[in-house]
Image 1 (cartoon, rainbow, N blue to C red):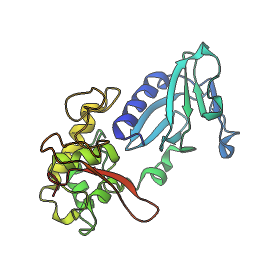
Image 2: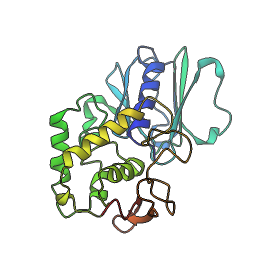
Image 3: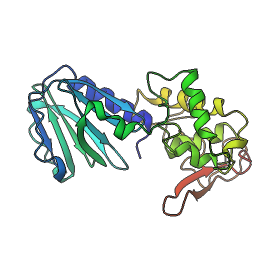
Image 4: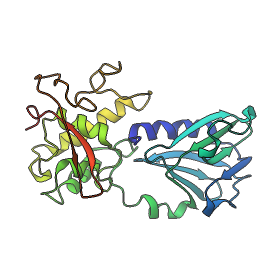
Length: 263
């Protein structure tokens, strides 16, 4: 699933292509909104909120999308013609005189009044890449993480109601770098503020580029400490990296960790 840095970068590209321009076409290829037409409306901005994307128009409407596991947006020149390859995967097209933005396999596609955005994003915790990230936001994220002290920190960090933007890649890397087992109780994390600030720094360092790296080396196979490295030696101690599942039944997510470095 694309994580907060990828969604932030996607929002920036959408903003550059759409903001300040009038839509000449909107093509919603989801049944509920198939008859919606936003043509003639100016786009004011495109922003991210955690893993959610919001495209706002001057008429007070918001296009809300979520990439989920497989979604993506592609920006093409307006004269490039309609999408050809993988056209069956297109869920939304927004175009102006210069550009067309094509959303593929979007997990969520909906339109709502901008004044009602809280109905779809109001539950989110502080956004690690939000413009309002500061000491107060970090403190609020810590408060939410510790509300259920017995909950494993691996589960708590992925809960977007606590802190928005973290997925399985950054979860694995954050916990390794802080020496925390995914099964450590949230209430037993010694310095949760340092943990969430680390998450902010990691996402911020990767948001402007394609690909993710936490080791300082972006080469394939060398960009992570533990994520995707099950059975390989830990880069610090040589212990074999483990892989397992964590979460409520039916909601399990993969974890990677070093059993020696992350007690």
